[in-house]
Length: 103
Image (cartoon, rainbow, N blue to C red; front, top):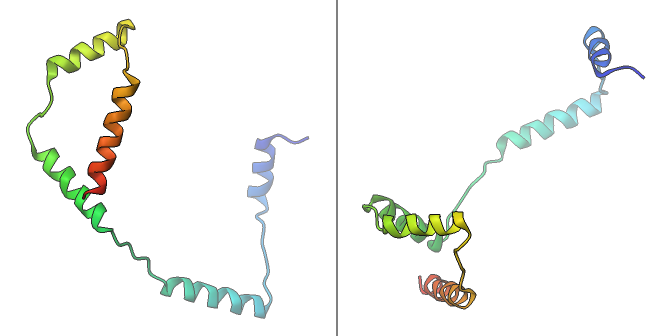
């Protein structure tokens, strides 16, 4: 079985060629023309626009988190003492979801 390098050498020395009939050429040209005429459009929902503006506002704000608390949490995670309260997490996720629905 030839190696990949031998295959590459053989292909480069004799490139593959294809021939199309007149009808196939016409179809290919029509296909290319119709593809060139198509344009893509994107539209954002009002929720997406609102989320984008909120993101910009938050990015412009000074640090709005407690660096000391973040450091304590990182340390607790690193040493394995960080405990997740599943009830509180679920409650906060539901609260966040309700806030998103109100947008």
